[in-house]
Image: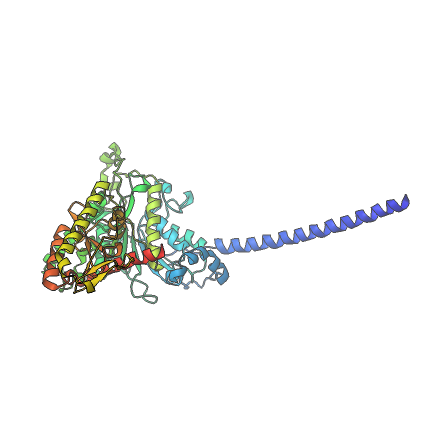
Length: 523
């Protein structure tokens, strides 16, 4: 009995020692984990000890003039932070380009704050953020990062401080807040629009998130004249339907009142410039690229994010107090809008993220082609298909007599099946069906004539671009009736309708067709 008792005591002692060993390991693990978490927290939440001088043109948070100790992120931590983005852009090797890019964001309200926020999170190396305004209580329903304690502070400074918490390493993320209003006047704007000369010669991208028409038009005109790529956002107020958000050129954003006003203002600026300089048609030379007003129709110069939803909430009425004290006392700046715009906070966020998505994909060498805003009905698509078939049939009947046995090809491959004339023109079956028409119209040509840029509202046709190849999706171009007539005339007079298309326009058309062929290979 005493032996069994001693045995149990021995087992109990061993159990106690084992539990103590496990307890010590647990305590050590807890201490190590807590210490690491504390270090990471201190690293991520450190802020510069001083605020930038708001009187300067560029209120940079990155100057070393105060001899502050900079926080440096270890490469492995920064790499893990951006690992998901790096995977997405791996095929284009886009992350190095994103990390070395320089982006200017003008307007840091509900739209611009979300754009700048996501650009910073995604690894953009240099971001200049411009806004004269301060955070207000009413802006907390839509601003990306502002909190109650930020009310009354400049939006640019508030945003810079919050973004610095995401990446405390000033070498990995350069934040350049400017507390000033863009006016388009060089003397008043100072060096606001100048890129950091020690880093780059021009901006990789300018994001326009301004909600004032004259200022917005001035910024777009400034960039268009200098060939700077712009992605601009139209009105987000009084709307809420996320399925109505589109990307297009400025002219196609016809259902947005702000876009209409901006187009009118741009035309006014152009006409004023022509009177002052005496130039004709806005061209400094015969090159169409000098015609800066063409940015209205060219989304490669200015891309527009807009909502086709009809405004469902009107501006707030002017109060008796505002009438008594004078409307000029209630605007943020002279000549700025006084009446309050109703805004559901989700819409500015969605449009701001759309701007960021397009910007990142362009910077990373993986741009996407937005789908056209307007869809065509089934009857229209069917008529377009039938018109293509009839057109091809007429070409075949006209040229069939020239075909000899030597030119016939009975291959089962659709790419080569058919017949060829002595000059190499293909005459054979159409290689699409009615269901392919919507893809070709909306995704490939965005419901616009590839030659003139005119949108829906005029008669459109699908035309075979290269007559030596079949009428397949990567060889069909959407044209308006006027462009088709000229294209056919050029075939007769020049031997090839493509030779009558302006060189730059032809390059863009053939680039689109190559993208279509690439997608066909992938899928």
